[in-house]
Image 1 (cartoon, rainbow, N blue to C red):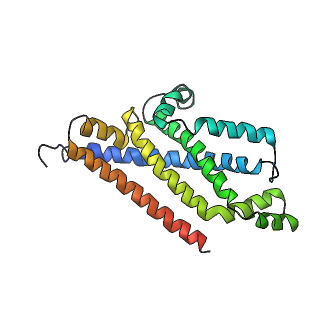
Image 2 (image 1 turned 90 degrees about the vertical axis):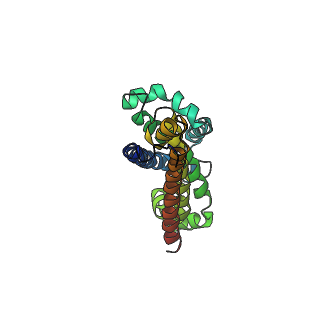
Image 3 (image 1 turned 60 degrees about the vertical axis):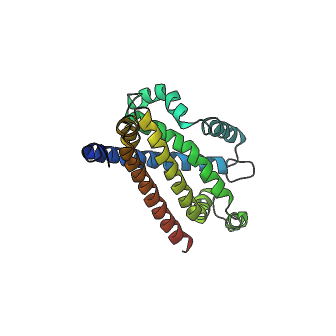
Length: 221
């Protein structure tokens, strides 16, 4: 292990691990919440759909298309003024969580919209023909039919948020990204760097496994 400081930095590594889990969990919660609402709105306001509304669709579609392609390292800097207004600071973990939640919401909205498109239109038409109201079709037919693929989509988003949280750490967002940059890469300690990498990989693998198991159970109902 050479002159690595890995064991000496154990408490700092543990704290960074906790910060990453907290950041990812909060960002995932708000990202799924916001992304699902926007994704449902994108799908249902399209022409010929349940709540067709062209002006609403055009505005939402433009917003998602504008913000979603922005690389996260630029996005976190761009939304810094807004983060100051909403969470009271443009730097640190709170600002990183805000930026991650916002970016995740735009990302997840497309995932939700695409998975809703995969639902057989005949199922929706049959429910409408039986007299079901539009809200009832939405909550008792459309969402349940798409739930399995949606869980897989949320799992994909989780992996992306973990990746982005590490990027946030490099620009003051704390967590494992900051730890790897400060004590690993910045101190030329390869062991510390790779220990951090392995922990991030373990988090992603565990999240992917849980998502796969949950989606499989839902799809087999």
